[in-house]
Amino acid sequence: MNAGIIGLGKYVPEKVVTNIDLEKILDTNDEWIRTRTGIQERRIAEGEETSDLAYKAALKALENAQISPSQIGLILVATVTPDQAFPTVSCQIQERLDATNAAAMDVSAACSGFIYALATAKQFVESGTYDYVLIVGAEKLSKVTDWQDRNTAVLFGDGATAAVISKVSEGRGILSFELGADGTGGKHLFLDEKQHIAMNGREVFKFAVRQMGESAVSVIEKAGLTKEDVDFLVPHQANIRIMEASRERLDLPEEKLSKQIHKYGNTSSASIGIALTDELEDGKIKDDDIVVLVGFGGGLTWGAAVIKWGK
Image (cartoon, rainbow, N blue to C red; front, side, top):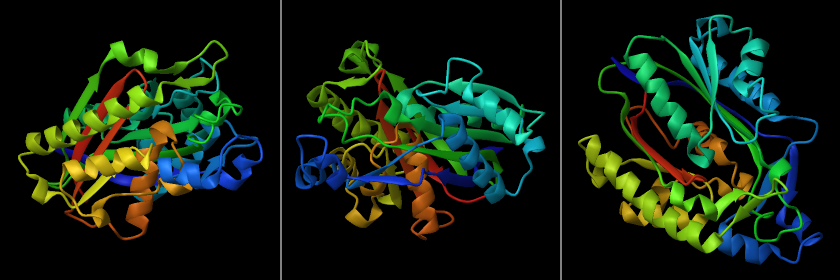
């Protein structure tokens, strides 16, 4: 039995904050932000909490998978910005979905959270424990962003993504994955005493460029494939220069790199799934394509996966 993604969805808030908007409140400018990060705008949630974003993305994934909430055996929500400590976001959306047969827990691995949830769901499906696992990556990073700090305020946005994991046909699905962590790097990306994101940009950049490339190569080898087999790369949408470094490590042409960062900024655990959803809707990923997902995040954590697309 192989586990794979049989349904996918996303939700982003309506409010758009552009670089031009940020010029009015920060000592920065549109050109500086675009050339160094690739970001042009981001979505900000007003009157919505992380659980609201998660619920709306989950509805879309279930509709795309054509299953009912009662069929879900487990809900995994990757987030570092829950509404509160408990009830967890996963329990809140379990109630709202009326997924009465589902267990529920949150996963905290920062921007790597979607990959961690994906790998966890794979185990439960392939062991036969659950037929359907709903994974969600949802963040309201605007509430932990210091809007006076020009180095971090330009980077982050809010949003959510969801995927239904179930058995797929032979040869398709999640072919390999890798998870990792290095707690010694936690001091480079953390919440400060005011509960705002604090980051040593130089150190995080160096870590991300190295680890994203290494992880992508590693999961391709674990799947018994080569770089030439890769049809599309969907990296964590944190910084266009980090993303390009991952593409170059795999010797991929530009058209095989997912670049959705300009629309959403860094949405942490939601970013890979949001980008994946957009690429599918744009027709850039087709059945039997080999897709590599790779991300890094606070902790420091990292994760990667190879998927042969299709149900």
